[in-house]
Image (cartoon, rainbow, N blue to C red; front, side, top):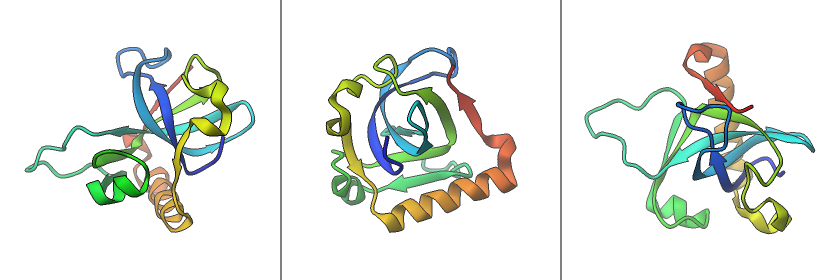
Length: 132
């Protein structure tokens, strides 16, 4: 799977972190031919008087539209999953490259990689790792 890709994933929940969960759009941080590390996204708005946690990137509706998404969303680099590349986790897996909703432009990929690296380096305790 292509690093920087946004794609549909059955992201594991905190209640069942080792099983396929609810459908979300995930962001591929890195991977191999058999597994990927995917960051969680949500279109649920963040409470206005609550500071964003470390590792969260807000995408406006305009930014989301450039990534073929219909509304603004949050990318949670603090909530990630290491998942096998199978249709159990990725419902559109058999579609191959057609399963990719969008690929982040290189400047955005660099920004997100730097955020993820800083989170690992300075706030590793905040990272929730899920997956089998």
